[in-house]
Amino acid sequence: MTDNAKGAFHNVIHHGDSVALMRAMPRGSVDFILTDPPYLVNYRGRDGRTVRNDDNAAWLRPAVNQMHRVLKPGGFMVSFYGGQKADLFMQAWRDTGFRIVGHIVFRKSYASTPRFLQYTHESAYLLAKGDVKLPRQPIPDVIDMPYSGNRMHPTQKPVAALLPLVHAFCPPGGLVLDPFAGSGSSLVAAQHLGRDWLGMELDEAHAATASRRLAYWGERRAA
Image 1 (cartoon, rainbow, N blue to C red):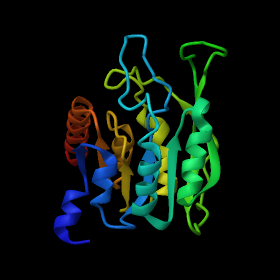
Image 2 (image 1 turned 90 degrees about the vertical axis):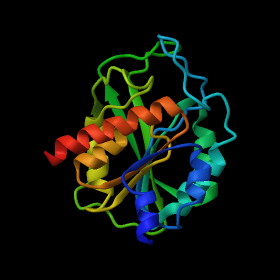
Image 3 (image 1 turned 30 degrees about the vertical axis):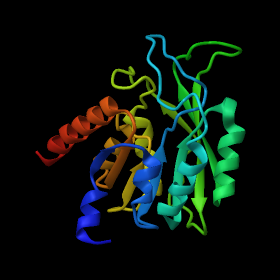
Image 4 (image 1 turned 180 degrees about the vertical axis):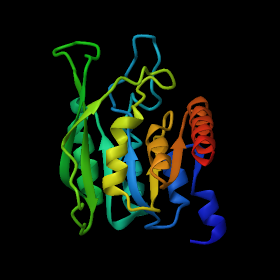
């Protein structure tokens, strides 16, 4: 990757459609993908906030295809997903070449809006591209997820729950990509652990929030 290309795709948040943005990236240029995409459930929070593109699956297959293309061979992806639409996510992952190698439950101390059940956890799959090496210290498949407060995003993930994932599946000095960056929690986790990071976010307001957040923590880390 040239210095110009590296500058465009390292330690920056891009506002725009992640499929188009990833198409501009070199193949095999990302070490680890950690992402929390729309769950395809037409989400609406208690405060009325919604998530862009959560009402359709048209983006899913193209996005997964590009994520597989930009991930290095032997790399991992951790993707949250909506349980009600798990079949769509699994089919997209498998059709593009990802292998499912693990499942992670994030245990919450509170219940989301109850419907048929009280939902007290989030879930993500660990996916692999090609032949991968086992981590030296495998992390548990159940991780506590403290409440983030959802102040910056309606489905904001807490950084503390994401740090073990970056540490385990992204090599030191590697590049972490989140094509659905939201408020930037996954990228803050990467930054805290000294990894490079790259975020993409369709919503302009959330992209600005993530950029400010990463700049703030970058200054704190440099001080």
